[in-house]
Length: 318
Image (cartoon, rainbow, N blue to C red):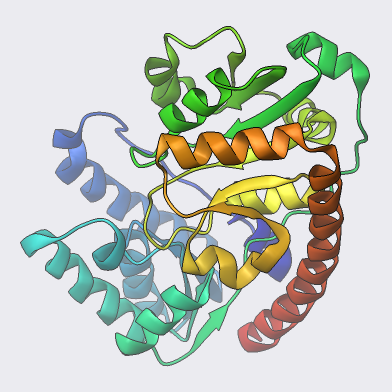
């Protein structure tokens, strides 16, 4: 949402109330409903750009826009009923998603699968706006490398903590490879427990300051992102390509549709295949150089795509 708000010249506002256990949810969403309405009524924006999930944010924004005669744009970071929730609850959320998507003046999605699903749900106007990351301004930094590793090669893996992210597979691949240190970053509250007992060549760094994180990616030799999340186009893939890194990635339709041959794919998250690919990429300097060139070329293409998509988004919002 930071990227999208910058693209359209808007102000991003994030509200969190009563964050904690799931049994707080009914009270949390009720509090968020009133807090959001008060915010919108106070600021009186002509256009509200709300993100789903959670769908309750766009739904609340829709109520305001209908009452105040304003316009609603919804960014569907994912479509809940397809990705995560089944059963009666999933069908209920799906009904709300379809209602909001069809009522909004414009809907945006990060890839074609979500866009097609939104159109199937009855959305009137859908625009694909891919994630985008500016080219990493930093260069390889030997001091950064020596601070975090004493091996010849460094791999990086950034994770958000989704249960279907396969950190254990990445750790196993690194532990079976010599001369490589795998550095993992991400939120401690979601990752620390899963990374308690790691081999000596795997280090968990927690959440780094942004400049340190950028310098680390610029100084790494390759990156890895293994996940079983369905229809997921991980934001970190854009980060890695923006740093010209060779990348090992799970093979998914939405990933290949964007990155094509710029990434080194594994068909499954099984330890054997991931370990073989990990060893192959870390052990072949020429192969890493080839994928670096592919990443640079892909970043050039992503910059052109981003410019075109943002221009269309701005025109539609006007």
